[in-house]
Image 1 (tube, one colour):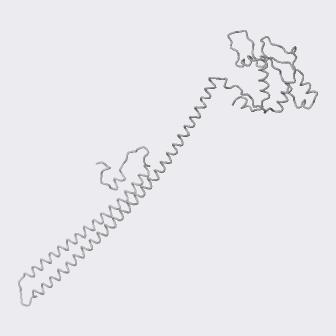
Image 2 (cartoon, rainbow, N blue to C red; image 1 turned 180 degrees about the horizontal axis):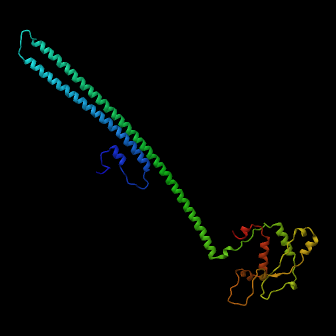
Amino acid sequence: MDETTAQPTPQLLTDIQFKVARKGYDPTEVDAFLERLSGAVGQMQDRLRQATAATEAAERRAAEAVRAQSLLQARLTEVENAPRQSPSAMGPEAEAEQAASVLAMAQRTADAVVNDARTAAAKLLSEAEAEAANIVGDARATAAASIGDLDARRRELEADAAALDAFLLEQRAAISADVSRIQTVLDDPRALRVAAPPQGSVRSDDAEATEDIHSVESPEQDVAVPSSDLPTMATPIVETEETAGGSDLRAEASAPSEAAPIAKVFDVEESGDDEEEPHDGGRLFDDTDDAADEAMRRFFDADFEDDDRFGR
């Protein structure tokens, strides 16, 4: 027999098994509720059995009273129909009155027994019904509260899941953007070129060094032109703390310095092999001398942090 269609009993409530479904109720809470409901149903069935037993006992007593009444009625009939035995015997009227008295007493006794039985049965039945109604009401209230709590918890979990989904989408978008930027840099390394320095943010020390560099007038006869016709760059002389205060040393620092070819600064080895590709930094040597000097001047005049200098 199917457990879902069987007659509900305390044993059935504790032994019944349900299939586990997704987004269902908490099995622990459901088992606890079924256990409490099983106990309540058991108590209600016990009270109902007691009330039924009391009613059956009262009905038996009422039946006995009816049988006693029938016996008395039969006895009365026999007395009325019996002939007189002696003159001294009781008269018919006295016997009839005595029989009627006995019959009335039996009737009152039977009525009292029946009334008591009915009253007791009605009382027990009313108490059992009230107790059952209270148990069912409490069970329904508990079930409704449990369902409300579970629904609230489900809504909270759904909100948390939605927030997590939104966060994951945001992180995926950010990661995709980062991957796109990295791929762009890998595809086009020129994106890592140093940006133009901001105007008006020159350090005082760099400004003095720049003035010293510009004050150097390198004679054309002192400049060594390399055989590869590469542009040359003047090597600046940095002042130290000991020479910063002396005008004589500053004058010496302002003296022309020998220009070194850029090819030696970047340690570019000249090679006669035509198949070897030039260094990536060789793109700087394709510009004119003025463009190279301007780029170096802007680099030393710039006032920005290392992260900004390298485009981070």
